[in-house]
Length: 173
Image (cartoon, rainbow, N blue to C red; front, side, top):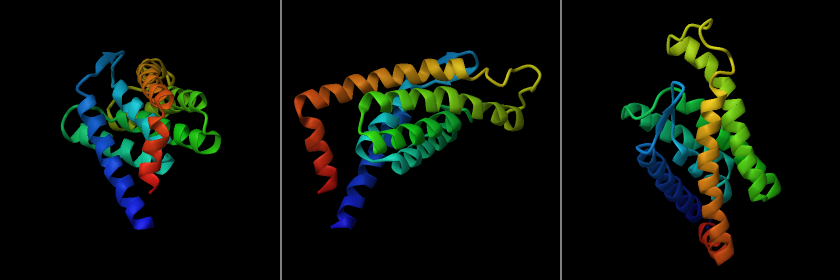
C-alpha cells in the first residue's frame, strides 16, 4: 500500500514540476531577476499536498529544467528551494494555510534572496561591490507574493468546495 502512495505522490510531483516549468514562460524581469510566480504557487501546492521534501525536490527539478532549457537563471535555485522547504515545514507543523503562504514569502523573499547573493558573486560573475547583499530580496519578494496570492486563491477555493480533502485523500489511498 505504501508503494502505491509513493507512486501517486511521484506522479503528482512530476505534474507539478511540469506546471512550474511551463509556468515559467509567464515570467517578468525585476531588477536583474526573472520573477516566475507560478513556481511559488507550485511550492505552496506541494507543501499542502505532498510535504516539504517533495516540495524541495520539485523546486530543484523545475529550476534545473528551467536552466537547461534557457528559461531561468541560477537565481531560481535558492529562491524556489528555500521557499519550498520553509512553507512545507510550516504546513507540516501547523496545517495552517495562511502561515504556509507567509512561510513561502519569507523563505523565498528573505532567505532565498540572501542565499542568492553568494551564488551571484561566485557563479554569475557579479561584482560583490556592485550589488548589496540584500539586493535580491525585493525582486524575490515581488515574485513570491504574486505566486503565493495565486496559490492562496486556488487552495481556498478548493477548501470551500470540499475538493481539497478529497484530493488529499486520493493521494493518501
